[in-house]
Length: 302
Image 1: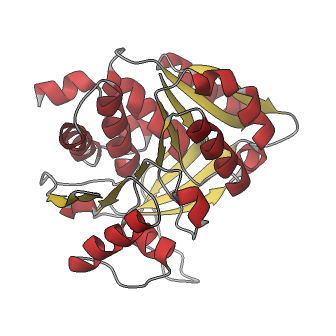
Image 2 (image 1 turned 180 degrees about the horizontal axis):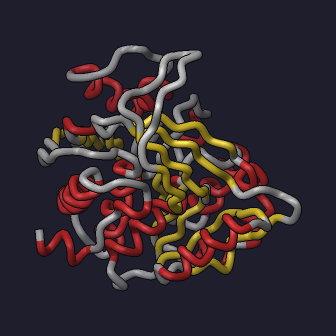
């Protein structure tokens, strides 16, 4: 089983010709409400790309509003176990306001809502679920105290722990030392190390530094440039498939879903990275978060 612990949001997506300057008003294009949240996106990607070979469960919180009901139904429709998705009374569901420009790049502002109330107590209540997992997946759109508690519990139970340290922030070394797969992007890798430089040989050096903090595997995602993966045996660069991107929303979440789905079904790390990259390449050719995540059969067809 794959257990994903994290955020569940409704994405409010607006197309724009370009990102507005401070104080500027511009005319936008199409608007849509789309199921999202890094946690839920990764759970949906795991479910679609595992294609029923491994069950997926979600641990998170929604508010007692229409968005919460819609997002819970979206998880259920993917066959995801939502028994540990809690509805918080008198609280709004998390939302993300997303601007997507003509080049497919996005700018996101989050309102955490119920996500901010995911607590260590919710993790303890899901102990049996976590104990049944083979891989536990986490991000940073819920309280850090809860993330740390979940990682400590999963690690103590001998589970493989994958952390996507997004949004970018610094993290305690003792937390990183309990992570089996750390999957930051360039900015997040730099933030973890308190560094500004990114790219090229710098990424390889930063991956080595993150390994030295105790992570078993570090995968730095480089967007259209690919992925740099490193472990105790060394590092390797995996170039990305070249496609015409229209929206990068959830591309990283899709990569992680493919990576985790493949690892959970016995693939090698190289095979898992390939599947994640193939899925992410399809996702950027589509608009939205969960609306862009492909199913495994679509990868086979492509």
